[in-house]
Image (cartoon, rainbow, N blue to C red; front, side):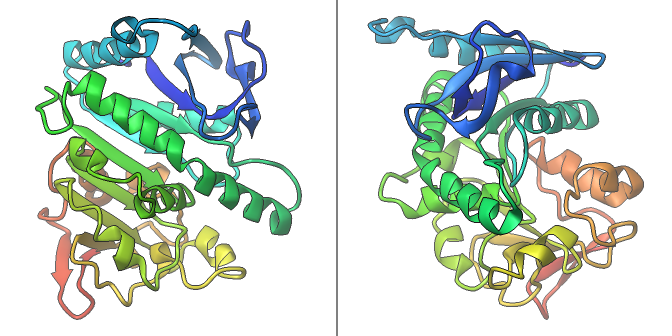
Amino acid sequence: MTIKMLVVTNRRLENEKADNESMFGENPNINGPAEVRLAWAEKQGKKWNLSLITEPPGVRSDNLPSKKVFRAFKKSLIDANKNCVFYVHGYNKTFEESISQGWELQKRYGVGVLVFSWASNPGGIPPIEYPKARAIAGASSPAIDMTLEKLGRYMCEEADADCGISLNLLTHSLGNYLLQRFVEKPLFSGETRIFDNLILHQADVDSEGHEVWVDKLRYARRVYATINERDKILDLSDIVNPDRLGNTASGLISSRAIYLDFTDADKVNKAHQLFGKTADKNPVIKEYFSLVFNGKPGEAIPGIQFNPGKNAYDVS
């Protein structure tokens, strides 16, 4: 059974009366990227059905619509016996593409998905658009902070309480830069303690010095960082950036990260989204993501072996 997906977004509300993907656009919220809106989303065939959650000013804190929504989402997960993935997508994704990726995650892995959809597709040619998207990602860190605060308060009652489900954070590509900027700011404290696993997937962040901010992620149970040295998307990012964490199998010195090197794994080739169709072709990869998306350790399975020479697990 596929449940409704919950969407948190700091994109601009384009059409409050829309009931489909045209509800949100490609620019940040008119009040700035720190402002977020909530919506339910589900797909029936090829048609999206979205329902905006309104939160009028002046509502008492004990009666906030967002409080009711997060608790309703948790109840739907418990009733369906599903765990949760909080998904932060990468660069150059339209609103529709971002929620489609979340929906595919739900279907492929049998989890519930909370999508954080940020304005990663500001338009223009890549040499101009990419820095704009990166700046928006950095400016979105207060929105992530607010979302994690609500997750901890409304779904787990307290940040260190048992949620009754497993919560896991998946940050993909440039979505990792959004997380990095949040972790580096003074407002970061222990918000990530609500997660069993943090998956820094094909991170479009600097490899050099990554350990400084990754080591601050000490509140989650496990922190995974995936690597594919042939990643075609991160190879393009290398043109304007230093080596990226997601395609560099050296300097893996974080005391918190568990590194997974997928470079020579069967069917990976130049893939950037390892948890998608690539996982469908390789049962080791599929099992790994199935485990970590459900709050379990994923590295101790056949086909994954630790390589002490680079401080990473090789995936076959």
